[in-house]
Length: 233
Ligand SMILES: [Fe+2]
Image 1: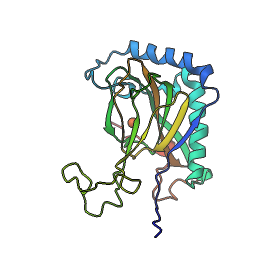
Image 2: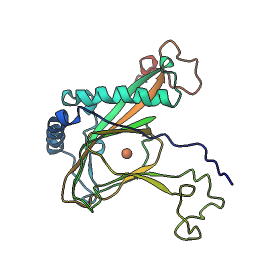
Image 3: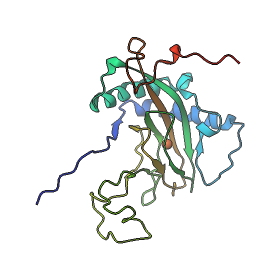
């Protein structure tokens, strides 16, 4: 009795071979930016995320040049793998920021709604065994096999066999030097850092637009920003 599965979510990752060479300088740059932050860190149970603390343009900061180049290269590979014709689109890093997760800090569930592709790079990952260093969870919001909506929820508790046809999330433990790429609309979270060590990562939001030549020819692609007109006010 075969059961076939369809419509897989594409999560791309690559362990960057040059990661050890750049680890120290990236870590130093992140901690310096965090230290210079003027925005207050209002939620101590949440990891420090640069995007809501005024540090969201590391893509144009010279200390991050190497990883920005890697993001560009691997996002292009990701898009080719999911069938995108790169000759017809321009790619932009829209914003990028560091995340510093200390003991018992986490990142709540969210999507990157202003972007199309998201990437995360792990600069430093806790090594304490037996404790969760803060895993990236991707939530199964589509639930294509949930034959009654809510059947698998904790309030109903009827599904008694956890398997790959009804799983509610996929967990990716962080790996030092790993670059991971996924659709920005995919809802995700980072679990609590249960260790005494620092967990430091970078997040990148990438946007696709039509090329200048193709602008206007594609109904579902944003025209290139240099063809927009800002309101005169
Ligand atoms: Fe995120």
